[in-house]
Image 1 (tube, rainbow, N blue to C red):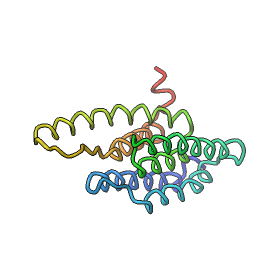
Image 2: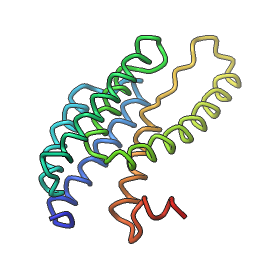
Image 3: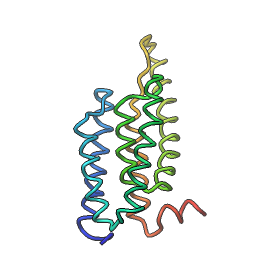
Length: 164
């Protein structure tokens, strides 16, 4: 059932939620809890539409999301990440198999680095003295949408396209 209408509808809905996350993070430097909950709530429907088995497939997704949350919550405790970013990445871990999630993290880091450089330069040019706040939800959304597009919309899945 992986190429069915419902499966594709869920992927489009996830992409829209990621765009909303990016927009609200740019506008308010906040990713709302309702948005993260919507991503989490869609995951079981996506598992069903994708034909995942309860064990080990769904178990892997749940374990990966829990692990991502624990690691990123520690980074949040040290002030290295925002809470909304932690929750959004943990919610995305429910949707993406481990290899896809790791590729998404690499893309997110690259986009986030570019975003940080651009916003830092803008901050310096405007001679602002307040703390620089990076809307990292933009990098998360861009990477999430990129991996969804590569994996599900392309003729070549991400695992094959990145392998060479």
